[in-house]
Length: 124
Image (cartoon, rainbow, N blue to C red; front, side):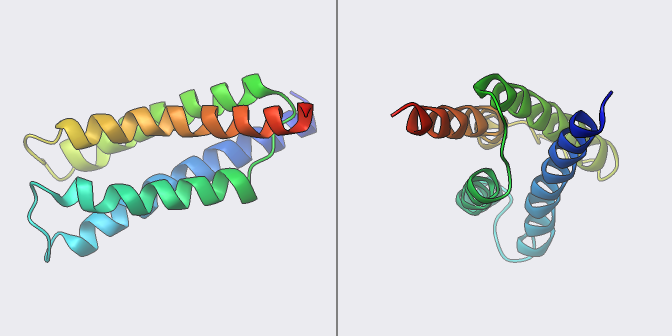
């Protein structure tokens, strides 16, 4: 793997982890103040805003397809890290509800939409 691809992979994994950690940390902080039933819905808008900021300000890719790959990697990371650190480590019961599935879908859809927007803008 050449140096450029390594840098892109590191960038992808680092931002994917930071975004996941942001939501995880918010969940830990807000858990004391927000009912568990709506915790994900409270975190979701903040997570979307931070994700969009990262996608517009910190992530650049040379091809639209790279944004699709980014979405796939970030979604897999979110699923795996949630399972390890919430379901297994913290033994959270009934974790997989609509808010979690919306979160997973957005981790794929947001990079794809931002990539589409960026490349559509370039073509004009």
